[in-house]
Image 1 (tube, one colour):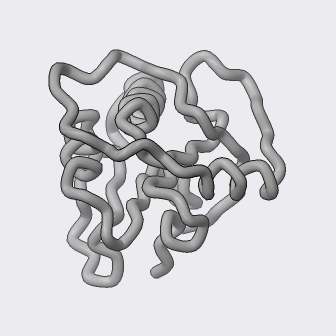
Image 2: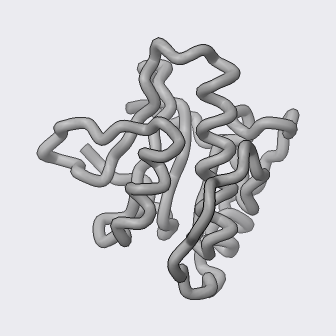
Length: 138
């Protein structure tokens, strides 16, 4: 199974898979802080030997809670200096923003500030820097 963060050059890719679940793929060598932050927002790591950097939200959570968790995690990680891409329909407060692949790749290639230690509680829902439509299937 592929890792979208590695494929697209981001630190985290958050998207709705073909199975209806919200997934977060982290780059292969992602710092532990990324996984910790995703878990704070309710993502769980699945025991997949092919992709240990893949997390998902429990499908039984209400839709609004899933959107708030995905959007909040993306915003928190973006504020910490990570390169995050999230599908626009998962972002709380954004109806639709579609970025061409060139813009998405350009944003992913920008130099991010060093991700230092983050203290305090994550915000309820922050809007991340990069959103896009992917049409990916898991």
